[in-house]
Image (cartoon, rainbow, N blue to C red):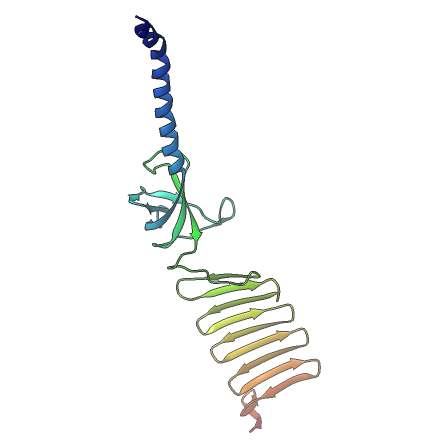
Length: 203
């Protein structure tokens, strides 16, 4: 009789403890799913969505972060194989309420700069731009074309043609032919120098 009375009194408490245990397990699962490392599996640039694999699971098409997305907008489409931080803001296990934060370096996509002062961006075709805030130097290169600017001068190269600008002079060089402008005047060099078709100097 005492056992029956005890079970009667403790029954609701035991049931409530079982409910709390189930709730805690659900919260634990949600917490585990909230933030994970994933890898981009598919990209749909038209809809600005991607699918991310995390462990054995594949997310549905979800949105990804961009550097900015307001009145000033910058779009950067992630690459297949790029690592990301998968944020499940909805807390579910399906991944439908998730977003992907890309930009984690990996063996497939290592860092392009190992200098603290150097910020560098490299595009898929090899085009590159960087700025060093210690030397105050900005560089940009695209195949045979490059530009380098500092506080002292600007250099532009297109194939064999070069242009150098400083506070004191401007130098334009194409192979053996060149022109220099400075405080002393205009200085021409090359195998042949002509003016309006008239040769005024030759090597």
